[in-house]
Length: 149
Image (cartoon, one colour):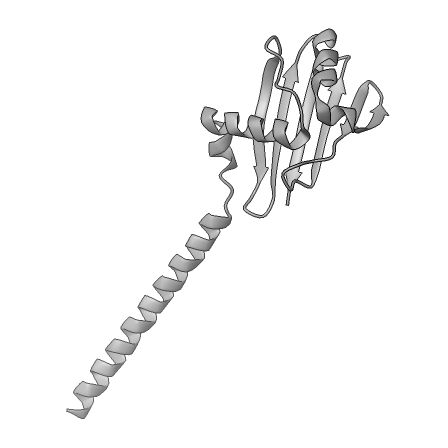
């Protein structure tokens, strides 16, 4: 009886140990998945891209993208602790100037120049930490970056 009880106790303890290891592995996997950014999926989802564009324009207090502009990129980067959005569009210089003039955030921005690129450092809204608009008139390209952490 003693040997049988000893074997049962060993089997129960071994089973509990295996269950504990499996449970621990599951918890680590779940934490990993929560920290894993969904950027790639979001960057290819038109509904998510529309939301990213809306947030980017709101954060920068920017006018809507001009109808005759060509949006080249709408993407996100980061994880659950940091998030950034980038929107890139091209348009003729006149359209870009009109868009800048119509954007309230640009009116309060600090302007930096580097080569053919003008950088407008914006005062971000919605608790974001950073926002900027880069205008390259030589390439007829506007890049908007906003970041939150």
